Each structure stands twice: as C-alpha cells, then as structure tokens.
Length: 267
Image 1 (cartoon, rainbow, N blue to C red):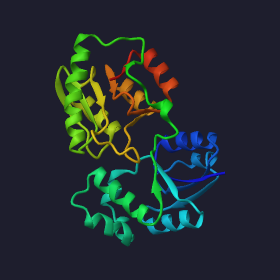
Image 2: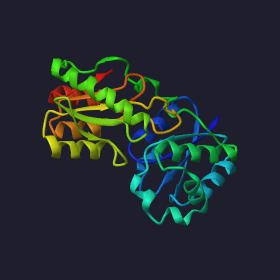
Image 3: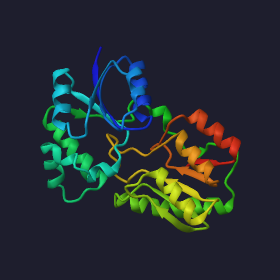
Image 4: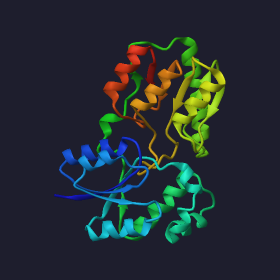
C-alpha cells in the first residue's frame, strides 16, 4: 500500500481529501496543526501527529521517518498566526519568511514547497483525488440568474481575476455593479460578513482561481459553511470559476441553496 503524507489545516477540505485518498488505497500519515485541524480527521487517516505551527522541522522529520516522499496540503491556517510569536519559535519558518520579498500566499506556500522538496518531499496536486468536486460550467441550482445578476457576475469576475493575479485575494462581493468588498487575508467568510454590513442583502459573491494557480496549495474552496453564511445575509448569488474551485458538501449545499433561493453558478 502506497503511503502519502497529509499536512492538514482547518475546515473540512482535509477530511474530504483523506477520505478520497483512502478509497484509492493510500495509507495516509497526517500532520495536524494544533488549534486549526479538526479532531475528526483521526477517523479518516491511518496515523496522525499533532504539531504546533512552530514545529516545522519536526514535520519534515516525521514524514522522513515514515518513509514518505509525496505530500499533499489541504485546509487553511488562520492568517492571524503569521503575526504571532509562534513563528519566532521556529528557526526554519522564520528563515523562510525573512527571505521572502513579500508575504503573499503564493510567496509563503511556494517557499515552503521548495523547502520540503529540498528534503526529498514532493508536494502533489491537492485536487488529485477530488476532481468530481470541481463543478463544470453551468447553473448549479434551479433558480436562474436574471439579467442584472449576470451583469454583477461578469463585472465581479473581471475584477476578481485582477486581484487574484496580484495575489491579494480570490473573491469579491458585488451589488448593482459596485464592488462592495475585496478579499484579503481575512478569508471568504469574513468577506461575506463585511459585505453584508456595508451593503445589506442582494449581494453577489464571485470566487475565482489565480491565473497561475498552483494546484499544490491555496485552491479556492467553498462548502456548506459558505452557503449558510450567504443565506444568512440573504445574498443573491454565488459564482465560482468552473473546473477550478472545490465545492465541498455539494449535495447538501445545493439542496440548502435551492430551499432558500440562493443562485449558484459555475462560470
């Protein structure tokens, strides 16, 4: 049985990935991050180690001792932790961050990937086992966008692509062809809440991939929590980039959207 290493962040992405890899016959050794990774991951993997964010060197040692050469990363790490003293406790992480020209997501994860590969640990495509969770082009709900919603979708699309190219974020909130909010480090759920405070109901959320998206990390993801947050603020529409955005819990998410009148489109 082939072994694969999993570096697991928060939310449900690591669970879906581990479950899919297990079905393909892989033996999974996970490194889970204290304060981020859900304990539910224990049920989906063969072996799990719980480390602090500052234990970067120990992470490498674990995978080497387990005879693993291929790794996959799934799930976020809260951006606020970049600004805590945890980083100072790891000489390896501190060295990586100090050497960066900036601390955009691509810069950070790209440097970590290089460090892992220097140690003989190759990062593989994080969507490798989840291709069926990448919606293809089309309207995913029964309710259709009207003309003004399509205008917001395409208006938001162009601008979302621009901020994604700059690696600022991958999501924008639009209402009546006005940019209400742009995602940065805070993440999509916080963007949704902020947009609602500014513009109220009727918002369209547009989420895209970067033009040069590295599929080993930082894949755009939505799930049931995203859908619930959009319904809570009475959003009009969620538009995703077709074939490049993971939609977790699709069946439940689409059913809830149908029930509450939220439009979901893969563009």
